[in-house]
Image (cartoon, rainbow, N blue to C red; front, side, top):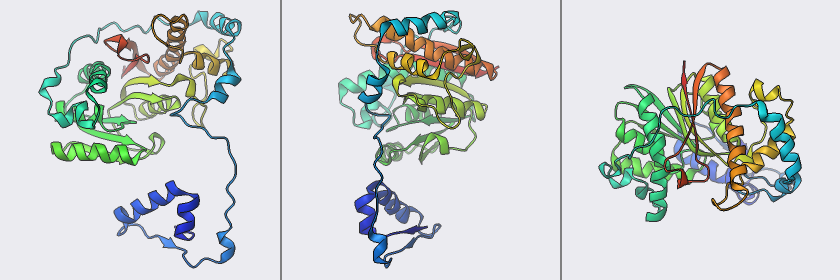
Length: 332
């Protein structure tokens, strides 16, 4: 693997240089790097193309303005989708119930992930429905993968309460993976593996895939990864307006929604409106939840067509997050 002068790399490609330094530290004995420190002067001329900035983790005002929020257009979309029964996957088994957080040591609790108490309590509320659902699905010997795992708030709890299962934490941020690693080491958990990387590049086999608030298309990458690996899943989506088509994922995903002749542009307008779940007194909030349910019904219909029994549930308590839908799938 060849690189130009190190200072040039650091100047123009700081994230790549950081990754290169990490690989040098971790993989020096197994990976050979060739550093072209004596490259010709002509190689010092690096042209950086100008591209539109896009992040799954921030609001894209350009995309929002382009889509617009014309109510008449949205009403036409609702009319097209009137044949989609959003109640057909309604959760038949309540996920209510309190998970006993007091049984956990601090480093397994969200407080151990350096969250302030107010945020930690909110995180506990968001996690407990997922934990209850995973417990119902998991069997001794299962491999669980927590995609977009962050600092390990979900995966570490699962590893602690399911000691006969193996848990893999996958995240693309080195700071988050390092934070999770420190917690795992302090807890001396032997059933946890950590991977720094994107969902797309995870190739291992597993039995249950989980994710809490995977942003935009990351939710669909996780869903599709579970389907390909024949794994059960417990998925809480987020950032509906950030969905973008990929090489392997096009929208709508389900045949039922495709048959309505909903265009991809209309789908993205629907997804954008699904992020309008404001406070309960805002007039847009009911419409936002309706859009959320339609997007997640598309996901549920797609998974159902791939041989899954699917339920659309809610996090309990529902006010723990405006993005409180939970998609649960098990192989028939």
